[in-house]
Length: 249
Image (cartoon, rainbow, N blue to C red; front, side):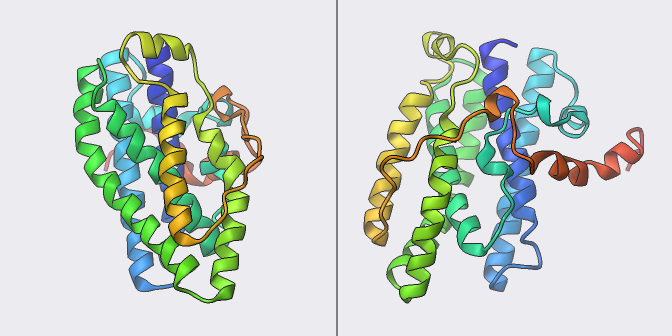
């Protein structure tokens, strides 16, 4: 797999899996406002994944989007471990939402300058949507940590500590990172991580939360090594398609 295809798969697979996780809050959100918000964000992420799978199909000769999304098993996915983890309590899902979408917003901002025209055009569109995702997550993290009570702040601090090593795994290098940089496709995961840490740190200072300093990144997802949670998620997500792949709606 060449470097560009690998990059697009990584981004798309992250979006597809986090979309499914976010959709699991539908009907279960702690507030109606949050129920609707997570459902809307899930729909956006699914659309982002679909757009990327279409580029892979139309420009790189990969299979059609439905086949890509619904017929692969866990070893064929290149998503990071962070998006695979079960939702847990709302504090964990909220912190994951903010940390993930902050990285996605910055990634799409960088991709607006991609040498691949279709990717640059898509990034210009998606960046605007993702900006609102970040605003939503950031607002609630700060509100619960700095304007809530002692319990809410403690829960957000605990969620940050749990999320942090998995969040660092978002920046695991894929295939031939230097080729992406050299060809102007993408400025690279290291540059993205630097921008993300600066943005996240400023938010955590405002929220009064302390970022863990020495946690090592949880890696492996980009190479097809996943948590025990991914395959059950895929089984659930694909059950209808696998029942009758040729069905027409």
